[in-house]
Image 1 (cartoon, helix red, strand yellow):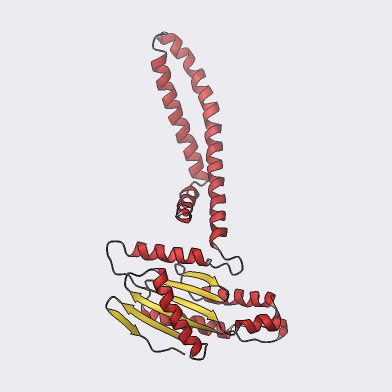
Image 2 (cartoon, rainbow, N blue to C red):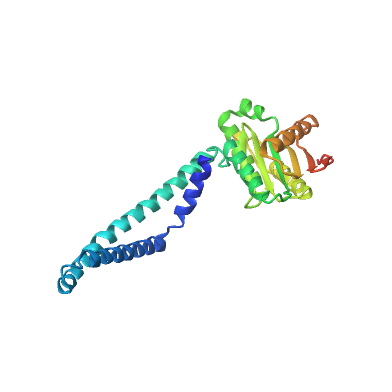
Amino acid sequence: MADALRRHFGRAVSRLGRSGLLRWTLVGTAWCLFVSLGYNAVAAAGIGEEAFRSGLPVAALLLLVLAGPVLLFLGYRLRELGRANRKLGLVASTDSLTACLNRGAFSTRVDESLTDAGRGNQRIKGALLVIDADHFKSINDSYGHDLGDEALRTIAAAIRGQVRKDDLVGRLGGEEFGVFLPGASQENAVGVAERIRRSISEVSFRPMGKPHRLTVSVGGVSFEDQLGFADLFRIADRRLYQAKNGGRNRIELTHIQAYGINDLAAVH
């Protein structure tokens, strides 16, 4: 809930650019001037029209001198607060090693996407992929954790290179990643999973100058039903274990509809 409020506030403040800041200052100043003059007109009704008119320019000038800078300063500080808020939200939701969403942010964003898409009792569809690096421990054992971290960054970059702008990519922990594909059909999901698997197997990774082939196993679920992240992850994770047990560097994907589950053939 706090993350959602922070993102909403950050989006609202981000719209206050330079032109918006100037407009806000001018409109605010004009409003203050209008209120002040109206109040002076009522309060000074008993001192005579001539005295009121003579004091009016001074009151208006004083208000402009005070209100304009104050409103400009407040608007500027609000804009800076929005920038700081966006940076804080980015840090809180991002895995520092791979620049993907962290597990908490990823699962929250997936659930929010599913909730938004399912408003009005509409049937929604999409896919969740769980991607795990094969034999990753051997990289850390053979070359050290620094190069293991480099392998994770390489894998994350390859995954991001195969998804759409609105798809979500997260690091779920260790060498495991998640990809959420809103609106994807089962054919779309298989195609994306295969492109990810192939691109990682073809990437150049040479720790200490020695070629080392990176591969991943992918478990996935495409769906046409109202489900949450926890349910989708549980199903995709089972398929990931099937891919691992089936020899690794492969894909296992299941399709779920409201009336049942249909398994797709493994994709090599």
